[in-house]
Every structure is written in C-alpha cells, then in structure tokens.
Image (cartoon, rainbow, N blue to C red; front, side, top):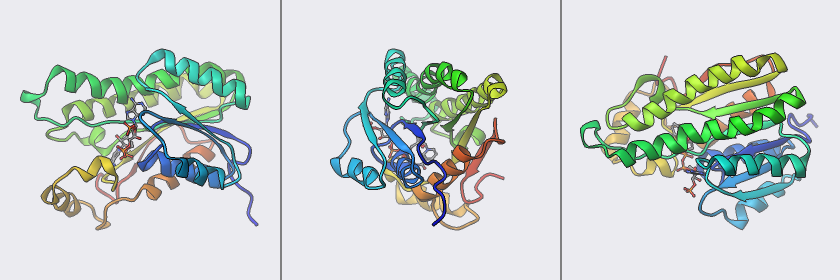
Length: 246
Ligand code: NAP
C-alpha cells in the first residue's frame, strides 16, 4: 500500500461545506490529513462523516472569513487542538456579478471583503504559527478571471487579481522559513457558483476550453494536493482550466 502524502498533518479549509472546498477537504482526508472545516451557513452531518470515514479527525468551525477576529480565534483554536497547522486553503469565495456602470458599492465591497480580505485575514493569523513551525503550505483560490478579466465581474476579477498579488508577496515574505504560498486559478468548474449561469453562457465557455469539458471539483482538489505536498514550488499561479488561459 502506498504511503499517504499528508499523514498526521492538519489542514484548515475555508468554505468547505460544498463545492471545491469540500472536494479539497475530502482529497486531503484521503491522504491522511486532519481537517478543520470552516463553513459559513451550514454543513451536513453526511459531509463530516465522509471525511471522518477516511480515518482522520474533522473539526467543523462556523464563521465568516471576512471577520478579522474570527480568523484570529480560529487559528488559536486549531493550534490548541491539533498542535500545528500544516496547510491553509483559502477557498471561501462569492460572486455578485453586475456590469460596472450598474454595480453598487455593496456589490463591490462585499466581494472584495470575502474573497480578498478574507484571504488576508487567514494568512495574517496563520503566519505567526507557521513561522514558528518553520513549515507550512498556503493555497489561495484565485480564478482565471483574476488573470484575464471578465465583463460583468469587475468586483470578482479585482478580488482574484488581488489574491494573486497577495500570494506572491506572502511567498516572498515567508519563503525563508520554508513556508510556501501558491494560488490555483480554476477555469469553469461545475458547482453551485456556476450553476446560476444561463445555458448560453455555459455553451460560450465551452467554446474556449481546449479540453472540451467543464472542470470538476476533483480536478481542483488534485492540484491542491500537489501544491500542499511540494515544498519547492512557491509564488506560483497554477491554472486548472482545461487550457482556457495559456
Ligand atoms: P460554492 O459552491 O459557491 O462554494 C463557496 C463556499 O464558500 C460556500 O460553502 C460558502 O458558504 C463559502 N463562503 C462564502 N463566503 C464565505 C465567508 N465569508 N466565510 C466563510 N465561507 C464562505 O463555490 P465554488 O465554486 O466551490 O468556489 C470555491 C472557490 O473557487 C471560490 O473562491 C471561487 O471564487 C473559486 N472559483 C470557482 C470557480 C468555478 O468555476 N466554480 C472558478 C474559479 C474560481 P455558504 O454557502 O454558507 O455561503
């Protein structure tokens, strides 16, 4: 039997009750990693059981990543209960799409607040713990939209481009202590987030994906396991998008 790649480690995954975050939590659990499952509204008992059935611990913690104090409390709690924080996946994210000239201040601010500020909050509070450990892997969920822009998503694109800048700066600041920080830029992945798009919008997307299929959550989870287990890759943006952006 092959050795599990994250045996005995602990990962915090934000927004992990469903979609990409849940797939990452499960993929890590299958590699022997204890999971701190952050969720905002609710998480099903079934999801927690699925993770525990991999033979690891699962600690569900409700909270909003955009809250600075929540991030601080979360990291202290995890450190106390597990002793270390080996991987942080900043996955929680939202969209509030609107054409720029009609976008409200609230639509802009709330997307930045969750996607960018939430990622900062978590990195800010995990960094002291990882610096003391002299190890750790931080993975931030960006998007191809943060690389190439997208009409109707100025708020989202700005937040994800910000995540990319934050990723590279974090990689430079923390690299000397063996901590990696990378971003994954998914293309179009079939989740609740993209289920709201019209059939016409989805068909248009497919035309620009060379591999000719939408991404699945497992495609992103595999990339997260790769980045969590490779200690000589940092400051990178890994596009997992079927070739949409190259
Ligand atoms: P999803 O199915 O909508 O899941 C997003 C998760 O984030 C939900 O569980 C949500 O919880 C949670 N969340 C939102 N705001 C939060 C907050 N303030 N604090 C804590 N949790 C929060 O979306 P997804 O497609 O899996 O997306 C996951 C990540 O991938 C996001 O960062 C997204 O931008 C990125 N991404 C997705 C795609 C795609 O095609 N799907 C492409 C590129 C990038 P609630 O449901 O309780 O609000």
